[in-house]
Image 1 (cartoon, rainbow, N blue to C red):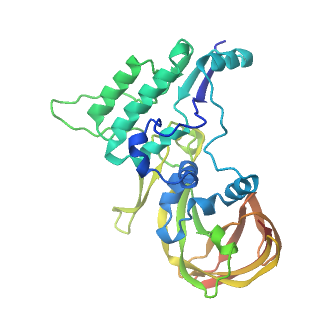
Image 2: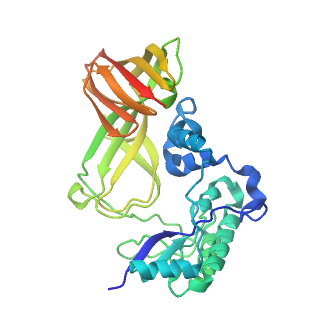
Image 3: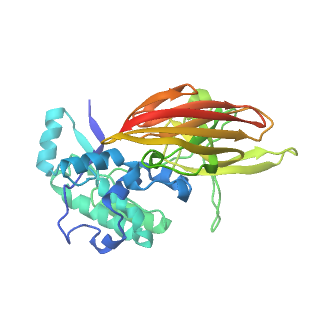
Length: 368
C-alpha cells in the first residue's frame, strides 16, 4: 500500500529582513493579526457589511490576549523549520511514502499583490522547488497559479511542472463537445433536480458588543438570508463543486426566473455542506439595546442585551441569532432556549410571528 500525505506545508519560522520572497511588496501586507484573520475567515469577512466587519484584533481577541500575556507576538504558525532530510526522516518514522507539499501559509499573501499576483505565484513555485530539491523523489510541490490570464496560467502550470511540481486540482466535464475556430462555448458542469435546500434567516452580533457600554439602541440592523445544502448524491448532487460565483434564481408569478442572490463558494468536495449568502432580508429587521454593562472586577464583566426582531412578512419566520461572545462566559438567564455550538458562539432560535415582533433578552457574565 502506498501512503501519500496530500496536505503537507513547508513553513518558515521567520524570513530575515530583506529575504522574504515577496520583499518588493512588503508595503502592501496587513499586520500579522489581520492577515491571520483573513486567512482563517477571509470569505466570511468580505461577505459582511463594512459596519459589521470586525478587525483582526477583535476576531482573534483570545489569541491576541494569550500572546500578550506570554509576552510573545502572534504568529501564523508555530516555528518549525525543516530540511528535506529531516522531512524524509519524519516520513519514514510515520510511514509516509510521498508528500504533496504546498509553500506554507505565507503564499496567502498573494491576495494583496493585485495585478502582480502572476509574478508572485511564479516566485512561490520557484522558492518551493528550491526548498524541496533534495527530496524531489518523494517531496512533490503543489503549484500556485493565478488564473487572471488563462494563457499565462497554462504557461505557469507547464513551467511549474518542469520545476518538479506535480499537484494540481482540475475539474473534468462528462461527455464530449466540439468547439469551432474562434468560438466561445459555455458548457454545463453538472445538472441536478430536486436538490434539498434549507433557508435560514440569521442575525449576527459582534464581539465588540461585550467590551464596552452602548448608550443608544442599534436600530434597523440587517438579518442575513442564507441557503444551505449538502453536496451529496442523496440530496441530488454528489460531485466536486469548483470555487466560484454561485447565483440563485426564483420563478416569479409569470414563471420567469429572477435573480434573487449570489455568493462565492470554495472548492467543495462531495458530501460536504455548502452555505450561500443570498443577501439581507428586506422585511425582517433587528434592533438591539444594551440593558446593562457592569465591570465586576479585574477582567470580569456582566452584560445584558435585549434584541427585538420585527417581521413584516405575511408568514411566520424563524430567526437564528448568533452572538460571538469573547473570553470565558456563562449565560445567567435568557428568555429563549440557547446552545453553544462553538467555544465563543452563543446561539438562539427565535420564532417571530407574521406582521409582528419577538423580543429576546439575555444576560451573560464573561471574563477576558
